[in-house]
Length: 80
Image: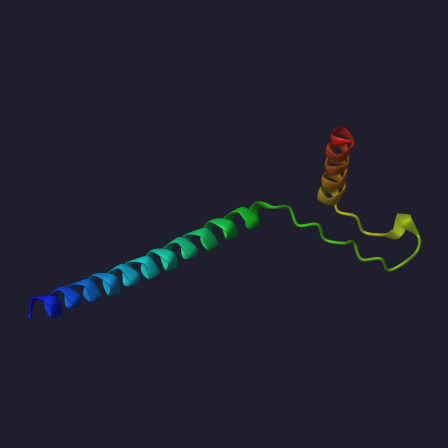
């Protein structure tokens, strides 16, 4: 009778461990996705300006787009 009880206890411990690991994995994944979304929301969004004409002076250009493109060019030139 004792070997069956030991096997049952071992099986229950294995099932409990599996359930615990599964729950931890779900929580870590959810937290990582939330943190990644938070970091991704901080990244600048570069929208391509709409080109409705070939005249460069008639195109709409965002000041933010100009500032971001200048800063990325400076960073790239320093790294090269």
